[in-house]
Image (cartoon, rainbow, N blue to C red; front, side):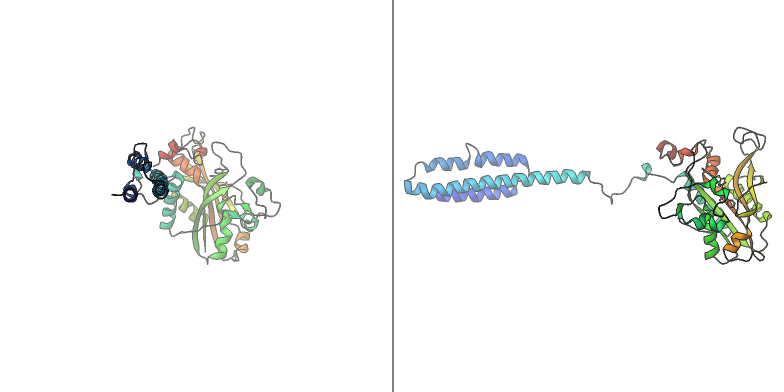
Length: 342
Ligand code: FA5
């Protein structure tokens, strides 16, 4: 074989070999074999020294070109292999959204959600429908339609956060009342669970973001007796035992008469303890018969239509249910707390 043929053959074999190399170790062996001090290319270059001047020119040039090309191909292959390795490594670290999840260590329902769902089931079984309303409300739905006049002192009890365009974060789920009156044809029964917001000093029983369940029944001949019966049903089913309730007078501009509904303390059966502050009763929710002005604002004749409404403080109900002594756990994101309800 002439030297020229040897050069061409070496180049051809080296190229083929290089293409099949996929690891850096093999690539290093290739480098030693072809491009190293004792490699094939060097041995060819050494042979050029014994050629004639004419041959040195042509064959020497060819040998140099092949040597350069092999160096380049070797570098390209090295970069390619490194890139592949890097991609392999990264793809192992990437979050795979399609990978099946091990649910034993995953999240669970928040205790508020659990009890809210139970409350919903209880009311649905009594023929109520569930309504939803916006958390950012107009002044009209949160206050105006509920008989809070512009400078009504009861507005001070529910200070809140205002948006620049004059809307507000609703302070109570009662904001749904006028929406229900507008959207539904009486008679109807609704509950509206949801988040509410107040500019509040936070402590063990007060949050600035908490949950209520509004209830509203509109029909003919709805009385306080209907209200007490409904609340009695709710409590008996939530606490899985017969409860005793009582009504005290309470003031809200959108009910007349208005009440605070208490239930007999379940910790001490009404004898008095630290939970009920020795009174034997625990305050659960404000309620009352819908004020005629609210019915009128909703386009109903208060001579024909009557109704009751209530606003259940869900967080406090959940605290009672599970014996939780600080409302701040609910929004804390504390996993140790949340895992107790998993
Ligand atoms: C109201 O919000 C009235 N809209 C309820 C109502 C509805 C009255 C229908 C009549 C007819 P009040 O501000 O008392 O009322 O709140 C109702 C319940 O929400 C309270 O009994 C309490 O359980 C809960 N609550 C009130 N403020 C907070 C707070 N800062 N943190 C946690 N729970 C609260």
